[in-house]
Amino acid sequence: MRIIVALDIIGGKCVRLTRGDFETKKVYNENPLEIAMQLEDNGIEYLHLVDLDGAKTKKLKT
Image 1: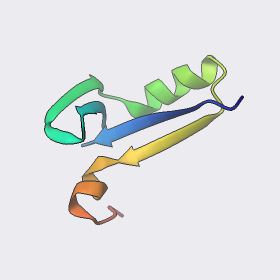
Image 2 (image 1 turned 135 degrees about the vertical axis):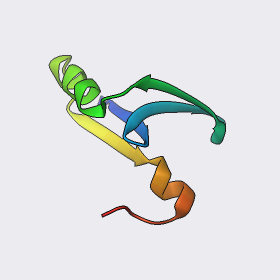
Image 3 (image 1 turned 60 degrees about the horizontal axis):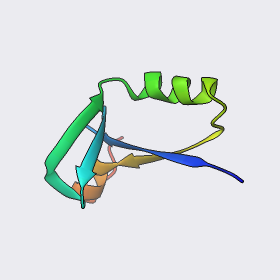
Image 4 (image 1 turned 120 degrees about the vertical axis):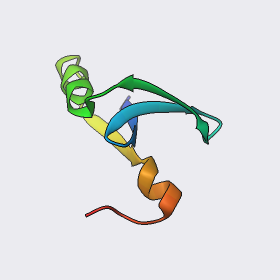
């Protein structure tokens, strides 16, 4: 089985939204790279990164 963990990012921070509502944002970690490295240390090989800023504005940040 392949497990793919999703990291939702707003303003460069790992967050969780309730039912996609940006007003319910809860910050879980200030550093997504730290979380990604912890996941890798625990055997996770794949990540799904979700740019919620881009999703909200419908624009990619370059």
